[in-house]
Structures are given as C-alpha cells and as structure tokens.
Picture 1 (cartoon, helix red, strand yellow):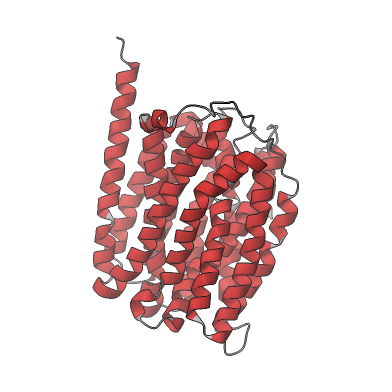
Picture 2 (cartoon, rainbow, N blue to C red):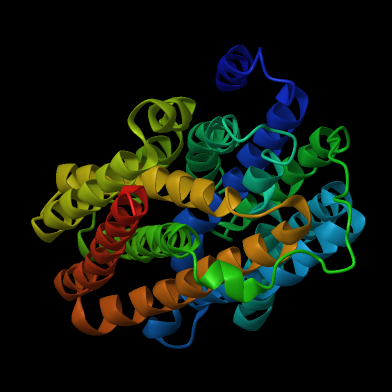
Length: 405
C-alpha cells in the first residue's frame, strides 16, 4: 500500500488523480494474477502435459486469447465505455483462476489450458488500463498518467511472488492449486476499485475519424507500436523460459525462481514513478534507446548465466528495458489519435503486441526444450536489431521534419 501512497503524492496536482489511482490498483491486482501465472503455469504444464514441449502451452494460449480480445475489447469500450468492459474482464479473471486450481486438483491438462485462455481474455481487457488513464489527461500529462498506472504493478511485484511462494502447498497433495485459488479471490478486489472510475464515452462523428491508413503512414505510430509490441514480446519470451531453466535445468529451486521473478517485476514497474518525468525532461527517444540498451545488457548477461546472480541480473535488466520501451511506445501510440479514433488505433497496436507475445511465449517453450537456454537467448538478438533499426528510422524522420524546406 505504500506504493499507492507514493502514487497519490505524485498525482496530487492532476485532475485525473482519482481515475489514475483506481486504475493503478486494478493494474496491481491484474499483474499479481499474471505474476502468479508466469511463475507457476509452465511448471504446472510440465506436470500435467503429455509431452515436455507443451509445458508452456497454457501460458501461450493465455496470450493467444489476450490477442484475440484486444481489438474487440477496445471497440466495446468506445461503444459502452471503459468501466463495464474492465469490470467484466475482472469477473472473468476470478472465475478463470479458480478453474485453473480445479484443473490441477483433477489433473486435467485440457481444462487447465482452457481456463488459461479465459484468463487471457481478462488480460486483454486489463491491457487498456494505461490508455484509459490518458483519456482525461492533457497531452503533457499522458506519459506520466501511463507511468503511474503501470506503477501499480510494483505492488504486484511484492504480492505475486509471495502468493506463489507461500501457497504452493496450500492444498495438500496438489502442488500450485492454492496459488490459483488465492489470486481468484484477490481479483475480486478490483471490482471495488473500478466501480469508481469515471471516464466519459467519446463522442462519435459520422466519419468516425481518419481512416486507419493515415496512421500506418505515421512513423511515430509505427515505431511506437513496434517498441511496445517487440518490447513486451521479448520480455515475455525470456521470462516464460526462465522458470524452466532456473528450476528444471539449473536446479536452483522454486524459491530462487520466485525471487528472480519478483525482482524482475520490481524492475518492470518501480521506474514507472519516474519514467513519465524522464520522458518530459530528456525526450522520448532517449528513453527508448535506454530501454534498448537494457535489453542488450540482459541478453549478454543471460548468455553468461551459470548461477543465481546471472539469472537475477538478466531478468532485472529485462524488466528495466521493458518499462522504458513499453511506456515510451504506448505514449507514442496514445499521442496520434483523437478520442473517437482510439478504439481502432489502440486496438490494433495492442493486437500487434499480444500477437507477438503469444508467438514469443510458445516459441520459448519449444526452443528451450529442444535446443536449450543458449540458443533461446541468442535468438533474442534478432528482435533487438529490429528495435534498433526502428529507432534509427524514427530519428531520421524527425530530423527531416525539423529541417527547413
């Protein structure tokens, strides 16, 4: 709760404070559920799945469902408003997590994967918390609004791994089931927070805004979408495989795995108290480059991994890079659309993100089981190079725009 008090202090001069704090609470609880899933789902899969390479199938299907939900959810928010869609997503999350626990007790891998997909639907709705915070914010406040909502994830970094660590054996002879029953109850608290969110529905014109083709020709939109999508997918790719490597290969134990993921999530969200201010002070391009360099450091450290310190450091750098790339990319995407255009523009951007995340998580399980950690990490060099080329192109386009005719 101290994180939320800090959040309130930072937002005390903003007219959007109430929405931001409520959305930050919902973000924290949603990420708590996601963290428990990241820590445990691949391990549950390795116990229930008929073959080893399907260990991450539940997590991958979760991202697929999130991918399929993002665009419809965004369009529903334009029509009915943010709040009812958010609250519906929370209700689905609670039921899905409870069903995951039941699937573990019954040893039903298919049910577990189905419940994981349902949880993905809720994550698809929750991914718009950050954009919702910008709806009532000025252009100058948008980076900070996104940052502060994502800062709610810091609470998830504290609670998620603790739930995963302390409820593993809550249900006798059914490892991990207690974790899912616990987060099922935790999710219901989000309903109280979201009930007070007040965001007006956007007014619609007959044209519905500019055609989407106009946005595809904008370097700012394209690079923002690429930074958010690849930044998130690469983080998910390495984070999905890390529990398999740490627990099953390096034999460091579930407690070490929970600690590594916990501090990874701290690195993801703690900088959010300052990232918006850093963007305002140094410019968004420098923050995106800093995120790219953090990913380079994470890959280099992961390649040298032989013990706890290496895995810990690699995941910490990975979390820091994600924060800069995801907030920076989301800010670019949020800057190009009017209220009535947000449903399409933000929906497509998040569809790209969840699509890549789904592919990345499934690829991680296959690469790790078939080729090992080194090959998995080396493959991450390719998306990092794409990020680098995208940032160079945006910088070039911005320089040309500033040059006199």
